[in-house]
Image 1 (cartoon, helix red, strand yellow):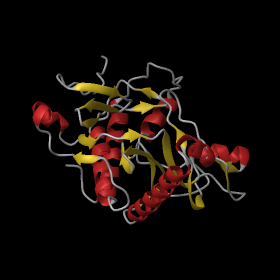
Image 2: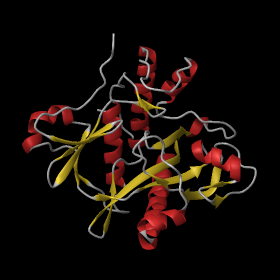
Image 3: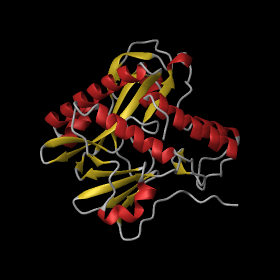
Image 4: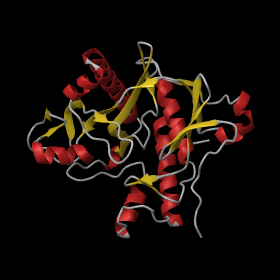
Length: 294
């Protein structure tokens, strides 16, 4: 029996875009962003949703946007008030919807790395550097870097984003704005990392997106979620190998185990993998915010 992917279809609202996980609706002078329970692995959306995933992503984002609002303005108008044209769908939107400002998104993903992992580890093994930033010799996988580094990437509409140098970022958006998003990203990462550490979480790396409203820089999209960040349990941290994480690790491990060729369509997930993944997302929320998901 085929499992139906959790989607958000709201008749009467204008669908602006449907991503792998989020759906965006145009409300005229603002936007509605809805995080669904869809899950993508190896760039393929799987047919089996993960219950509560959308709520976790939205609620963690709202937590960080509010907690770190003193660093840079963000796009959130409301995560609780769904009135007017949204009123008929308030029950569906509760917990996973955000009404946000419209901005002009910048064409750069702002990646900050505090530890060496993922594509950064692969780059380092080949060149001893990440995005042109030279690093000390002899680092192991998952080692903490001497200091966090800003390693931007392009925004790919399909496939993987591509790492770019800071100089290439300057060519895209100009020196003053490139420096501003770099400094802002590093500031957000440092403050978030310090807070997360008190709750037993290492934020190994994360990515941010920014937009402009006139000349004002606005933090947009999602904020320090398990989908946009590598969260590691501090009590299990052991450099020299890949680390356990608070995200879709159970799903990736299962897909590797069954030998899926990583081409669409993706396979359905068994109940135990779904439940373990759901529990991990809920645990991430509880650890980050200090309270259980309502």
